[in-house]
Length: 123
Image: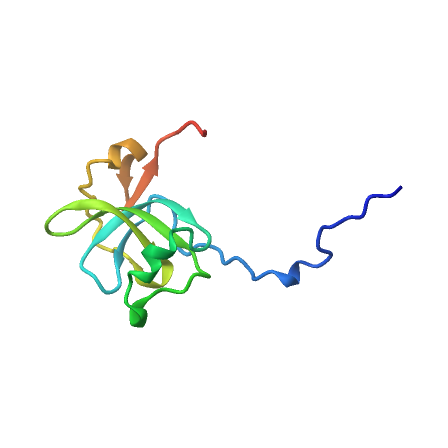
């Protein structure tokens, strides 16, 4: 008895995954809100909860089919971790370091406006 192959024969049935525009270690700023941060992880498409997405007003809610970035973020008052769609990010051209206290856990140094990643064990 022959086992039937259930894998798709064409990949065109799947939406293309876009390549991320920004890189881990890059300092970025939000297009609308006054915060900036350094990217420490990237999801190729939306990978957060429905509750998170629906909490964003519909008129500014990001599309799901784009990269989303995890940032060690800062604003004038505090530091925090942010999850931001690619459409809402711009490069930060200031060259200034990000003052988030977790930056040293992920990065060694800031070189020419880009953080250099620490060697980390994968789990």
